Amino acid sequence: MATDSKSNPVIESVEHAAERVAELNEQTARRVAELNEKTAERVAELNEQALANSRQASAAYLASYEKAVVSLADTYETAAGATKVEWVSSIASAQADFTRELTKMYTNAAREFVS
Image (cartoon, rainbow, N blue to C red):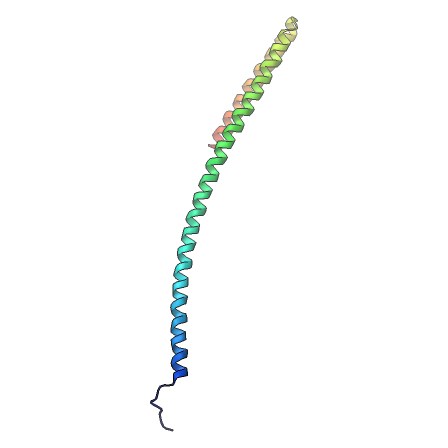
């Protein structure tokens, strides 16, 4: 069988196409790796922003909660003092003080937890 030294255009075309596909695969793999890296960086940034926003929201909630409960305790104490009955006023004052202290301890502990 004689060796054909002539080039076969079909084989050359297939080889060229295979080389081109290999090049495109390499380019695509590099681009995908770049996009994955950028996506991971963006996700990390968004996570940090979400964490900062949740801390701010938590701080605002705790401040509002504390203010509302202390205001309620003050109002309760004032209303009981308006009765002019000493023992009612004393009990209400003690309850209001307890409520204020408990609220401050709770909100301080919660602030430490979320910070």
